[in-house]
Image 1 (cartoon, rainbow, N blue to C red):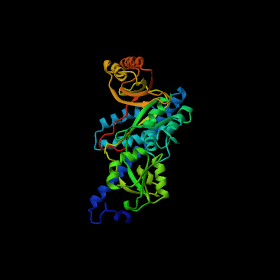
Image 2: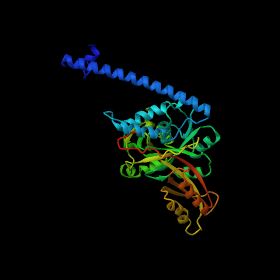
Image 3: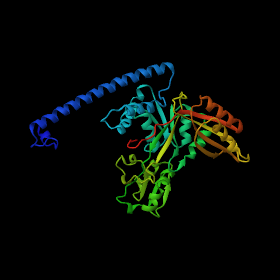
Image 4: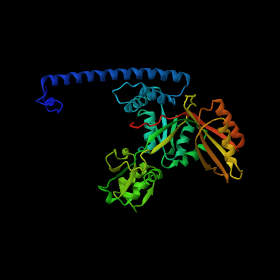
Length: 383
């Protein structure tokens, strides 16, 4: 045995020779399995590259909403163990995303700069090899897709703590870019700063959403400390880098460059704090068997019972609604946009019937997209 192994706690000097030989044999078997895994990964990559060639020939887009969800569900369902099922999605999600680039160029616009939760959601969805295009606003993300500067965009639309992201809803009204998918990202907030301790903090900065998601913790832990709203969590982190009396709230990756330290972790008020992101651009996906359809209806406030009449056709057609949000229609006083999410695909007869019937009662309506539902985050799974 080499000197380095004799210093390894797994190779105590007093261990019987047969134990040391057994460990050596098992480690060699593990090494052999690792090489087999690598070979199979490369075979998978070859097949993905062939898929990319066929897609380019047919003009089909690289990203296919729903495929990852169905594959991960099947793998978890079929996992015999002892490899933990909770770890299966994280492992295979990285394998899937790592090979997207082999199918063709993939440019993805997100609400930047780098280090935001939108950036994290984009990287989780499209992998490290995609070309990421940070945008200043949510409207800029959508415009980048509309102009052809990016194949896809990803924008936050709803949070379990703070509800709808109104900037996204407003921007969707003015765009024809379709919704083709969604992602769920578990949001864990961290307090980062140059300060050595909490007592040195004089201001807390972040995007309005993280500030709201951590309101209770801030009230208890840093009472009376002013809170500063910024355009993004990354902008807040830059403030903290320049001023040691400022702390920023955001993802742990804000401190990855070593210029900030994490003063407190998991400071969100709800442990189920999750943000839903929409994936935009590309070909409308076919039915997957577990889909959502998003619609926008305009209705006048002065019309008595307008909302009741708008929703009645969905109940009559046994179409389940999963969300209803309302926003004022810009430039048209006292007219409102109702955003409705329903279960089902726009190609289904009952969905078509209900949408059209409601549309006849509205001033106008538009289908924003039909797309596969995101795979739910299950207990014990990382994101």
